[in-house]
Length: 338
Image (cartoon, rainbow, N blue to C red; front, side, top):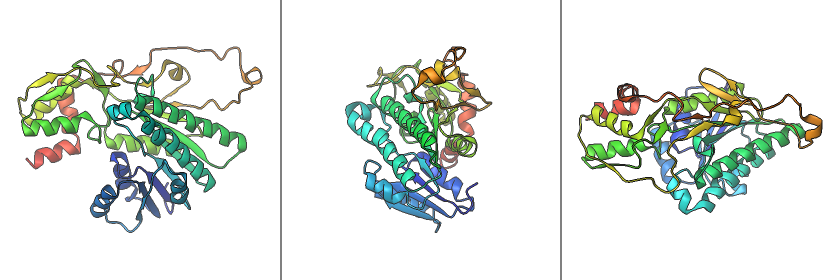
């Protein structure tokens, strides 16, 4: 699927970008271009993955000229650049807007200008029923991507855009799990916000699989949503304590700025028109124009069900969590090196 193709990963030094890079170098891809603003992370990645097909570009998605340069002669783009720490975005909402909304718009416009064939835009569960700046900016990012896909369909531009949306990626930057492990190994107190808070759980490999599915089978404007189990953050902490055979104290500190008790991956309205697959939902874009009198159908009505949320999906119990965590390569590595 990627043979002799040139691929750009924006935000390529992040958790997803690194995992995607590891997957791509196993193929016959011609070039993988890593675009990010962090030279230290690029240097670390360059030293850990030595492959002549991997090139590194310093730049910022907020700068259109930067995105125009890095997308030149590229076939496919994976847009993973984001400001995604919830509290950080709460204190600096304009920065979230500039990176997540304008940055994505720049990547898409530059890709169209440079005749990129397909763009995959990465989103998050926080974009669904958003209450924080990070989620709101990601929701707007999705709207921008879908609007651009509608524009390309109207203008018959030979490029397609798909959005992928998934929940908490275990062991990624920003996930609770690495922080808890660090505190456990240091013998420190574990601080949790609300013990009944639930979060989706998926691996980095799952996130790459979803993106590949969207790339292979997604049509212009599609949104692909990963189905995932969830767990309470209290049981997440207890499972890690059990795995590492520690008895650190747990302290409940209350919610931080912008936090939700439960996350959602798919709204009731989206589910009413979703293609329900085994591992994911596919939400086709509504590519009609604004002339509703012409396009609307009388029988095209809502058939609403409950949203797909972290408190309505399968919630793993403690034993199931322990089993899941022990299958993850990161946990295996921790246990092996103890």
